[in-house]
Amino acid sequence: MATKEEMIEQQLKERGISDPKVLQAMEEVDRSLFVPEDQQEKVYEDRPLPIGKNQTISQPYIVAYMAEQLQLDKNEKVLEVGTGCGYNAAVISRLAKEIHSVEIIEWLAELAKQNLAKTDYDNITAKHGDGYSGWKEVAPFDAIILTAAPPSIPQPLKDQLKIGGRLLAPVGRLNQKLVMVYKTGEDSYEEQTLLPVRFVPMTGRADKGGTYNK
Image (cartoon, rainbow, N blue to C red; front, side, top):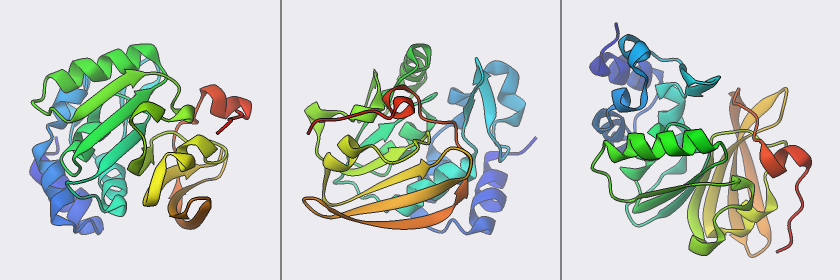
């Protein structure tokens, strides 16, 4: 049974996670609050774990890696698309001023709210909805992170980024890649591919070739 200390040292530091703020966030957030009772012995293993109905909590390394790539600071507002069980939102909340998270699966959105209520983090707002459209009422965002893979990055999410903001997302269906998008102007972007990944596909409008009117 892996310990939290082994997770930090072996799964994160030894694999290149070096940002002290990210390492502190991974240390601070209690992953056991987001994992079902029958998975508690595996809570700090470096792999996804089942949380019910074919859904999983992401492995610690990919959570830390994505958080480190975003280079967040305490003055920033973040949108997360795909709350899942709430673990990633909890980690991001330690690095940013506020995080707004959208989950398309209703029971998961409710589970995330229950899990997050076990923490004392007061800068997370979560709701049930289709994250394809972002969260226009609280936009624009300094950063946007997706935890499910669309075939291509939804335009409304790009529109809701501040100029100078960045969006991190797994993209693709069969062969997925983790992509960072930088918003360089009102309608201009730069894109960087980071590494191959495997995430659950984004559903809802993203699955239907969703259309969007600005």
